[in-house]
Length: 63
Image (cartoon, rainbow, N blue to C red):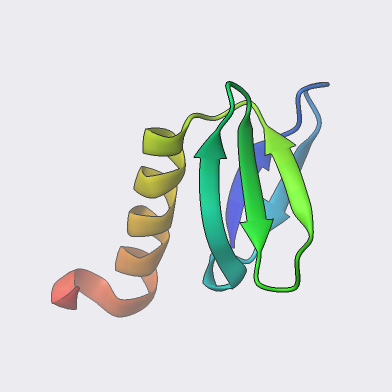
């Protein structure tokens, strides 16, 4: 799970294994495999780093 921020400042966790797409439109929109969408304040690069860091915690440096 990665922690992200809604535009109103509320923090929440999202299962990064369910992320299908991340778009900047200009707001960052995360779309999950079930079609649910979240608009967050983090940019695409930050989301990518959060996912990589989470995966490193789970799998070590094997990825």
